[in-house]
Length: 353
Image 1 (cartoon, rainbow, N blue to C red):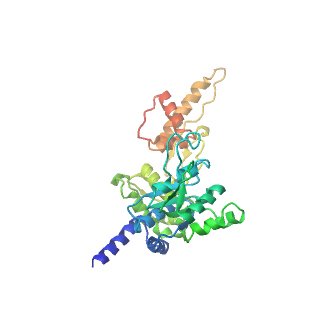
Image 2: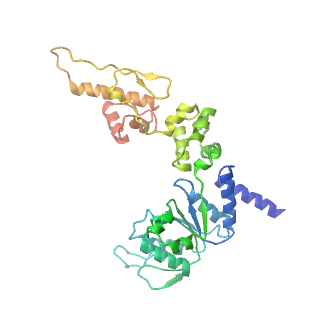
Image 3: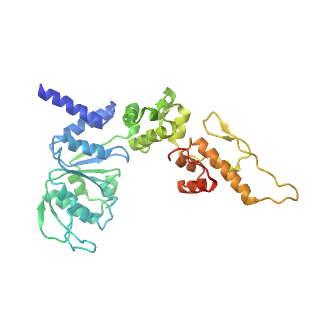
């Protein structure tokens, strides 16, 4: 009876990490449970933003190493000359700038799990050293000759086609087989669109009630037709953007279309001589017609430009509900530039940016 309750508890815990009831999500949870039973090296393949680090952490948390150290390292973000020190550590004085002994991630993760993200970006000479560590389960700090035993489970990830990299001589085939005792494909969001409503609720769970958006049927249909090139990460950013701009509102397909394409070009406001139409909006914002110089009377061009600039700042702030970063985007300005102009003209900041 106790074992049954524990199994149900473990299942519930995993479902709070891997959200959704699609066939792809259920298969992913099943594979995580299977992989958690062993210490085999796992390679996670899938597009950027699909949640590979989350899957790696779930494998760790569901297994016998739960409670031990979980270290995540992005191999593509560490300069090539420092990655050996980051992974294996170094001794004081071993190279310029090594002012003290450093314990590397492998040694610090002893007994736990190390997650090597973007393994396809690892330098070729480092691939050889990593292969030796995986085969011997020993590391040597930079500047030392002492071999140290480590007990670490290695989970790696890549969004690259490693078969092509191996064919091009950029990735070692023997390392691929050592890292990928099991290769697990993490599905893209486009392959599990039926999970989108559940994921939205998950991302909104800690938001205040007045920040949560609702989506009508047409809006949800559009979200499920979107191809989501940024995957779950893109959806999370979309939910946050919607809450900032439309907290407490019910959004339709037009609102969603604008939120999905936030970098779409807006009309050039200063060049307009009539009303400025907002895409998919129900209202327009009038812009004063441009003045023509009277015969024989000089025009204060600087003052005219400042007047137009001030008008367009007010228009953009109104369209953005006072959100400075959004108004700056509408005006094709940097946020700091818009703030400087607002100070210049004495425009008050209406809301936090």
